[in-house]
Length: 310
Image (cartoon, rainbow, N blue to C red; front, side):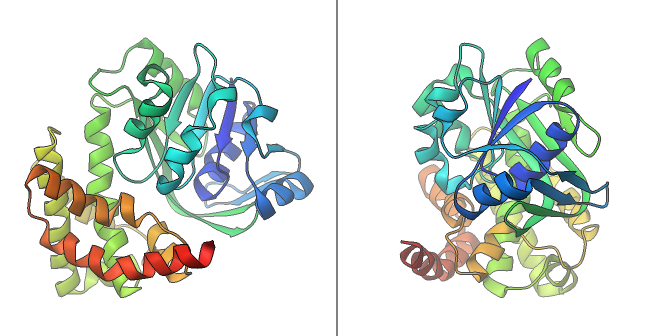
């Protein structure tokens, strides 16, 4: 399978690296220091599941240098999706599929608006990873996971075949019965953890062990559940308790990428996570007071980061 990994940060570097390690033809799209590092030193991944060294990888800056592929793994930040969608044309053939792996629940719709629904899958990933330096990814723990599917459809032969082709040692790939629900289930986890962690600038371990912040995490999760249900998504009554149990099993010092970006003064996914819950709640008539407050507190930091990045 010919695969283009569009965005070679922690997510793209890890999953693209595993696919390349096990024989898939992978081309990495990157820019700046990451592009230079990939071309000179290749890609490195440190992981409890086994380190990975790819001293030579193909890395390009523009889709025109890649040509058509079978699959695009879209691993850019959520706020970059609308702009990136306009650049996908040279990668797309009649059977190309684009799999978004962003946090949030809007990437597939943004892609479909730009390139048409037929090419676009819904997707998500779960991984605790960060970029140590350009071309060097650190996977902290847990089983990296990807889900894919078509909204409103049970997984058919194409999805099952694609999931089986992508599943490699060091990554689990599934085609769930309801991909939209799966995307929202992740959103119920990531938006609260990202927003609260960014405000407090503390790791998941402290958020879960302090009674006050554990209660606030639950409150934030329940808000996302109500927004999801108002959007027509079926979310189980046991979801929040299950996610809190999942959080209890994460490494104490885990942090979300949105939190790390805001702490470092970089543009973040605030508008696709915390602020998106508040915005979607207003559109659907669902009260989200906890997310409203977190979004208001974090908005000035986001504006400052974006001014600094210009």
